[in-house]
Length: 103
Image (cartoon, rainbow, N blue to C red; front, side, top):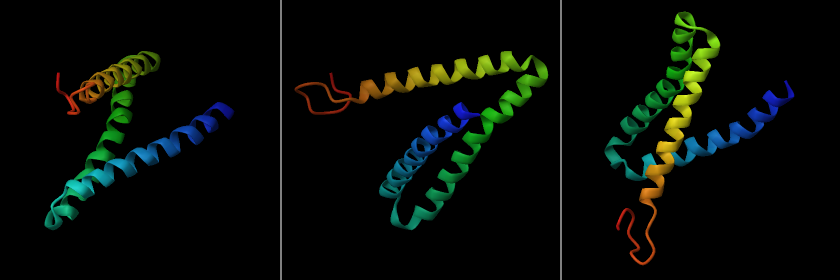
């Protein structure tokens, strides 16, 4: 229980800052007349993205064991994290160019 609470204390603020930062970007790029629609779409995608892993693990658990479903989920998260690191590294400005993705 202590580990669960500690993880929540760490992951909660990190998630909050991630949502806050991405919502700020949405507000900055949205046209003034379409801001409400963009924010509504953003919130729908966020809730859907949060629900999909839960539904996926539930479905996999009913087809295979819970442990196997958790392993599949962990592998998918690890793969997505590595892909995000690769994409993020490619967007970093190269030395001497000053432009993202150049080189």
